[in-house]
Image (cartoon, rainbow, N blue to C red; front, side, top):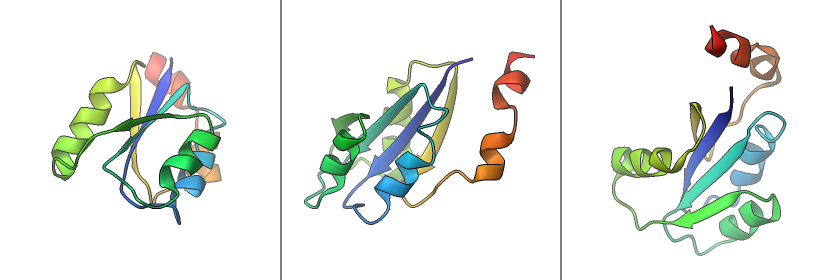
Length: 100
């Protein structure tokens, strides 16, 4: 089962690298929806090879829904830029449980 990771951002250069790096090993696709950052957020995302789209801020829920609608996988992990997946989470058999 494929997994898409979606992340919304606005000026998250302090957090975004850690967030993306925490999911690179298992995500089939990573989509970052940026609301107009004027720091290094977008460059950090692009350097990691993730898809970056621009969307002016719609509000938290609407922004999350908009980025999730872009995901192409059967499963979506929606993260905030200041979150990161732990090593113990990565060891859990997500794909096996989802396939049941």
